[in-house]
Image 1 (tube, rainbow, N blue to C red):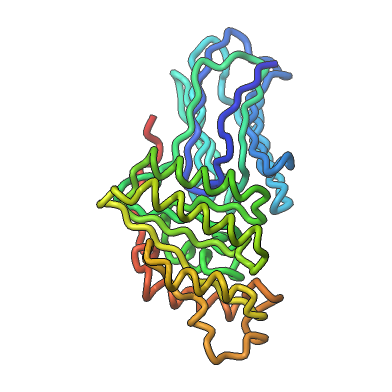
Image 2: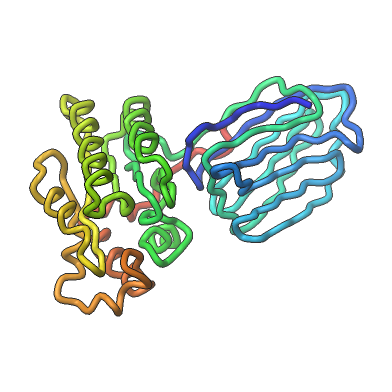
Length: 309
C-alpha cells in the first residue's frame, strides 16, 4: 500500500483541483487509487477509483454514488483529475481516451487529505484555483459557510460568487487557525483579505485576549505591505456578549471593518437567530445585504482556469 499526504490544515471546500499521474503494467480487479479528505479524523469525502468503477462517498451529505467505466488502465500513463467546482468531477485520461464522471452537489469540506493506492504514484499536486491577486480571500469559521443559508455564503455562492474561502466551523485551535491565515497571506500575496470569524470572540478573557493578540500579529506581519487591504467585522449576538469585541473592532485603527452588528440594531433578534450566536435564514439575508453594500467584490464571479495540468 502506498500513502501520500496531499493537504495539511487546508480548510478549502470548493474550487480546487487534484492531479494524479501513475504508470503500471497491471491494474487488476483489486487495485485502486483513493483520494479522501478528513476533518479532525472524521472522513468527509472519499473518491475511490477501481479498474471498472468509481465510488464517491460524501459522509457530510450522506451520499454514495457509483459509476461504472471501461477505461483500460494497463500498460500506459494514466492521469486523473479530481475537481471541486459546485460538484465533484473526475477526469480519467489515458493515451487512448479521456472520460468525465460528474457527481453533482457535493460539499467537499475537510482539513487534511490523502491518497492511498495499491500502485505507486508518479506525481500528484493540488491547486486552489481561486488563489489569484485579483480574487479576495475570505477566512472564517461557520460564519462564512458556503453550504447553508444560516449564514450569508450560500446566497453569494448561488449567485455565482467564487472567491477563495478558507473556512473551518468549530475551530478547535485558534493559534493554528490564525497562524495559517498569516502563512497563506504571506505565500499568496492577495490584495484583499476578509477575516470574518464568529468563534472565540465572547467576553471570556482568554479567548478575547488571544484573538486580539493574533490580530496584532497579523498587523505587524503585513503593515508594510501597501498593496494589501485587510477587513475584519463586528459580530451580532442575541445576548450582546460580543460587545467588548465589537468595541475593539470599531476602535482598533488597524484594519477596515464591516459592521454586521449594526445591521441588527433596534431589531428583535429573536426573529433573526436560531440560538444566541447563529442566525436563521432571515438573519442571513441581513448579513447578505450588508455584504452587498460593504464587500461588493465578494459578489462577483471570477474567471478560474479548470483542467490546467
